[in-house]
Length: 253
Ligand code: 13P
Image 1 (tube, rainbow, N blue to C red):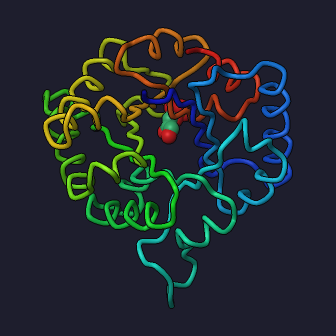
Image 2 (cartoon, rainbow, N blue to C red; image 1 turned 30 degrees about the vertical axis):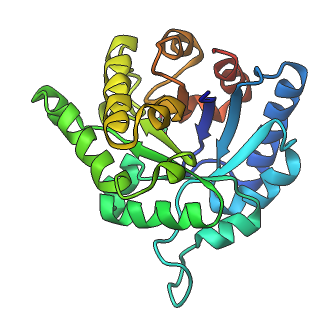
């Protein structure tokens, strides 16, 4: 059975010291009141914070994700961080294809596919992000956009590979805007994504894939969104930067 996942994406926030404090606070809250057995908590932290956060938290309570990795294995790529390096630093997962990486750093589905492949090769989970921009939704083209993103980035992987891939649907118009997709809009897209997976990989793969919603998830709306049958949790930006609010979201299943 697929897992519920509460994943925080800290983006480019917090110093190492602040991160250590925040992770420690969350760890204490989860230690006092933990999520159910079928729920996984993941923190997506900046590269520089991986080792420190890894030491602060109980790894049975909290997994650690990076927010990107290089599209090359190793070599003369100044400033890049490889999947192998992330694994060796203690990462369990890598967030890939976030809309901010697509929009500001020119990441294409082809590049994202390569990064997913390197992530899986290094025994980490890939959290693959997809989602339409406002104009695409207004033109009612959102299903086609998300379908194309999934086809281009994921369809060359095997059913076995899909066991290590989590999908995060993040409508770009809902990210950091305070404007959440309604629980119905989320369910509609998540159901469509699961159907798309079922057609390509079979029903079992589709049923076992965790599909997260991202975009202005808060303690106040998490319960309603997570209650939808095809929503298996959230990828949380702003609200993950506060231990109490992220803890409340972790308990919203
Ligand atoms: P917000 O929760 O701040 O809208 O960010 C969502 C997001 O981009 C998570 O990856």
